[in-house]
Image (tube, one colour):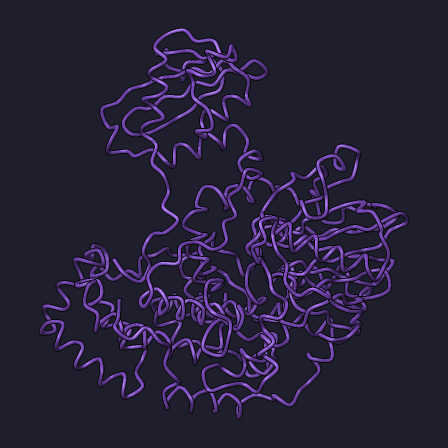
Length: 633
C-alpha cells in the first residue's frame, strides 16, 4: 500500500475547472429545488435505518454536509444534483399519489385506492422499504398494501418488496404486477453475471466511500445503494402490451411497454384519474446510461427515443404531472411535455450522431472526444451526464452496432494488461523514469494522462508503492472534477482501494429469493457458467434427474461444457446415474445446500447407477470471486 493513504486537497487546475463550471451554467435557476421540495409532508424522526442485527443500512443524515456551499473538491454541477437528490421524506405528487424520496437510490411511489394503497417500486432493501411505508402510513393512515407494481427489472425497483408485502398477502390475492419478461431479466442480470456486476457496482455507487466533500457525494441518479436485505416476490400479473388497462383497488392504470430502453423489461404508467404519468426510469433528471459502468446489456437509444415520442402521443394531452422512480416530478402540462421532448432528443441525438461519425470511420474514443451536444440541450439541467455521460454513452452506441473492435488490426490481438504493462514500462525507460515524468504531468494538471501511464507501472509492478500513491492521487483529482456521479465514485473508489486494499462488494443482490425465482432451465444455465472447463476437458458424465412432478432432465458434462435436455429424446445421452427426487431437493442439491447421499439416506431420493458421478460433476463447478481486483492486477 502507498505510504501516504490520506486524501489530498484539490489541485489548482481542478479548482479552476470547477470554478469555470459555476460561470458556465445558470446556478441561480431554482425551479428544480422548488419542484423537489413541493408537496413535502414530513420525514422520519429516526434518521438511521438498521437491519435486524443492528447494522446501519441507510442514514438519512449522511448527506447533511451538502447544505454547505460547494467545496473545491467537487464539481459544482454534481454538488447541485446531489443536494437535490438528497431531499428526503414523504411528498405529495398529486392528491392520492405520494412518493417517499431519499430513503434509497430510488423512489417508492404509493397510490391510494378504495381500500388501501398500491406500492410502486419498493426500493432496494426490505429495511428501507419498510421505513418508507411506515413514513407514508404515519401521515396518511395505516392503509393495507393492496398491490405492488415493479416498473422494471433492476434491483433498486423491487429488492425491498419484502419490507412492504408478505408471501401470505400474495397468497391471499394481493397482485404483484410487472412487465412481461421481468422475472427472466431480473434473475439473469443478478445471477448470471451478478458477481462481476455487484463488484463493479461497489465502484459505481461508492457505497464504501466515506460521505463528505472529499468522498462520496452522490451517484447522480440518487445518492447511493442501501445495504440491507434484497428480496424478490415473483409477479402474479404480467403487463404484455401497450394500451393494456388494469384496475387495482379502484386505481385505473393504462400501460405503455418500453422494452429495451433503460431496462430489457420496463413499462410506463398513466393514471387517467390523476392526470399523472409515471415514466419509470425512462425520463429522469439526468442523462441516463446506455451502458452502465457496472455492466449490463447495451440499451437502444433509438428505441428509447421512439418510446418517449410514443408516450407524448399517448398520454401528453392527459398529463399534468410527470414523475419517475428517481428524482422529483415535473408539474404543468407544458413543462412536462418539454421535459419529455428534451429527454427524447438527447437519446436520439447521441444515437444519430454516433452513427454518423462511425460511418465516417471515427473510432469510439474519437467519437467521444469529438461529439458536441446542441446548446439548447446542454443548458437544460436534466440532460447533464450525472449518471450516464456523453463520453461512455457514445462508446456504448458504437459497441451496440460494431462491437468492441475499432477496426484497427493493431488492436486485434493486443497483449493482456499485465504483459502489455511490463513491455510499456520497459520501452519507456523503466518505472523510475515513468514516475518521474508522470509527477511532472501531475504538476501540470494532466491527471488523465497520469492515470493512463502510471497504470502501466502498477500492473507491471503492483508492489511499487510510489506508483500506487501517484495513481491514487491522480484518480482522486479526476474524481474532484467530475460532473458525473458514477465517474466520481469510480475514480475515488480506485484511489481508496489503491491506498487501503479491496473493500469487496458492499451491496449483494443475489439472494435466496433470486435463486428460488430461477426457472429450472435457468438453474442449469447458472451451473454451466460455473464449470471450470480446463479441469474437466476429459470428463464425460451424464446424470438423469427423474423429477417427481415434472419432465426428466438429462445433464451432461462433456468437452468442458454442461448441457441439459428435457425429457428422454435423442439428445439425452444414456445416463451414468439416474436420480429420482422432487424439484425442491434437486435445487438444494445443485446449489450445495444438501448432499446427494443425505437425500438417499433420508428416503427423499432414489438412485440407479454410480451416485459418485453426481459428486464428481458438482466438483467441477468453480466459485465466483466477489472480491476480484480492479485497479491492480
